[in-house]
Image (cartoon, rainbow, N blue to C red):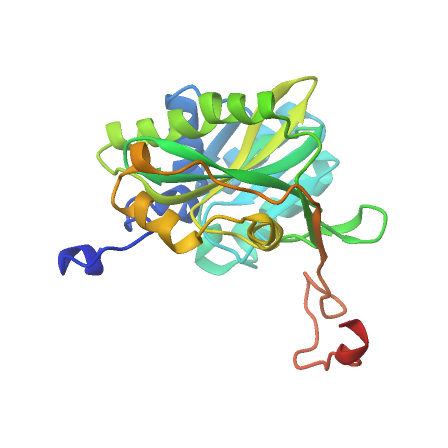
Length: 277
């Protein structure tokens, strides 16, 4: 906002546009209003209301602190008791501080997760590739939910046909909806998706090149990144040359301190870096 006020070209969302990530409740309402496929949900500032919803649904459920939590604010609850405990931790114990003043409680989706990027100019969007990351902290898909423990691109589930559907069903309706709400979205829109039996559901939107997916997508980009972002910032998508990609697979693994994403000791050394190069 400050750069635009000074007539300085900037790639990225305004404060209003950034609410797509800053408030999970706001994001869910936008998806629901503009027909973007997503899980059924409620948003509430009442711990009692959240608990009643969990009891009524009687099964696996997802509890999300609405505000920003450094990728840790989503609790996957397999039972009603786990869901009730999650509400107490977020809304009573305040493990995420003010970010947990409001929660989103939603349907537990199963399937295959994928992430997809699009560049946006406030009116429409252009696809920018996708990846698949792995969220659980332990080996063999075990442990707690994290911001991502590794990623690879391209993801086999993101076929050309699937990417076209993601743009048509998720990205473009979101951008057009934000414009209708009076807060045009510019920058990069990063969708977390669940895909099952050919059906797409939107888990979340981020408003940045989020890691670890960004690293593998950028490793494959052969086009000039800066020129591409300038085209987006200036709203000149009609002049944007077709993006060129390396067909080879890019893959990374995240190394994290023992105990992450819970409490963990700070300042632990990373040894033998030279042996990994």
